[in-house]
Image 1 (cartoon, one colour):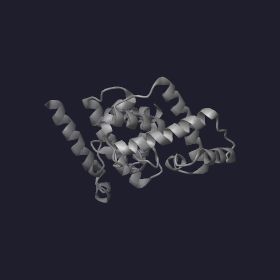
Image 2 (cartoon, one colour):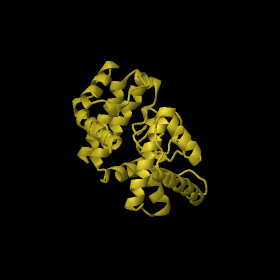
Image 3 (cartoon, rainbow, N blue to C red):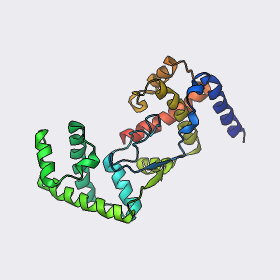
Image 4 (spheres, rainbow, N blue to C red):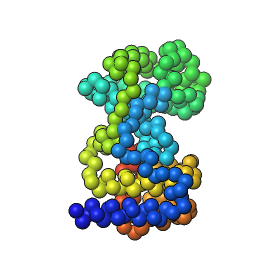
Length: 234
């Protein structure tokens, strides 16, 4: 109970410290308790509001693998995982080079994919062709199983699957604190990606906009930052 009261007091003090910034945006409008939705354009669960700490921390291969297992209840075999991982790596590279969503790329024919890859000095292997056609069929099967509806997964469940660990009470508090501060930070500079910053640089970014976290908040923020950084890099 004492710990709960302490955490509650800390979060109350956050909003007192925020001052005028709180008048510009309500930090509670983005929550770690919200669901993520699978986005077929990005092929990830993390195509969210830029102020969300989960923004773009996913990757198409991992997220599609999660979607497949959640919808079908079946995991890919080792050979399937290797083949899909290799294909997704190539498609992500093409997506970045051509500035085309990976969700558009998976609608290409094999010939169109080959031409696009060659236009960007990349090679389409026979294994790529076989896996690409299997992926296209699998996507249609999944959409049919989902009745073409959006699939949702809680942020915490998503994180636990990606990191293969249980999120504990202190982790929740760390993620909550990080989200509250991130909402304010990104309203000042939407180009900041917290997972690209060391924790020391993140604290400096807060200070640059006039926010100095209480000493008691720093371990919570650091834990939240560690989790998000691991999620991005896993």
